[in-house]
Length: 172
View 1 (cartoon, rainbow, N blue to C red):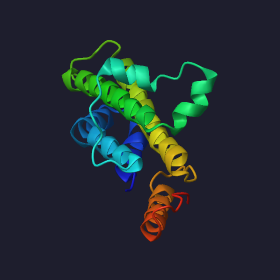
View 2 (cartoon, rainbow, N blue to C red):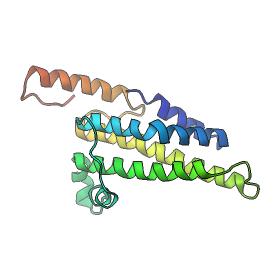
View 3 (cartoon, rainbow, N blue to C red):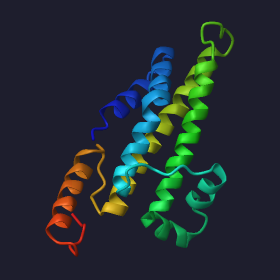
View 4 (cartoon, rainbow, N blue to C red):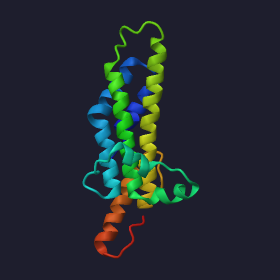
């Protein structure tokens, strides 16, 4: 899968323009969240990600100790939780942006657009980093600065290795 749309919206948000902000928020609400969920489910080898309550997502996805920093990164449940927390935060942002009336914002309007653009920009960058990290930690693929190319190649190799031998390693 290509991250072209994700990267396009990340780049567009850097302009801090209302049109880019509303377009990115609309895409995220209608396609983007599901796009990230689908990508993560592919990395985890699932048809779909199971839904997770917010409190459970925080319990499973929050790193609190130094030990967890090394062990959780190799846990599928951790990435399920991270994706659930991303979806909740993305929904919060898209709802706020959808309700905002940027045409009537006179005082501090530019500051609001700037802050929302920065927040959504960072959220999309975090999603990209999460997908790259999951591909690297769970599939043992090299992390890529352009998500998609290295992970797709690794998945293809892993699938071929597994189909040749049921005991073959899924390493790239």
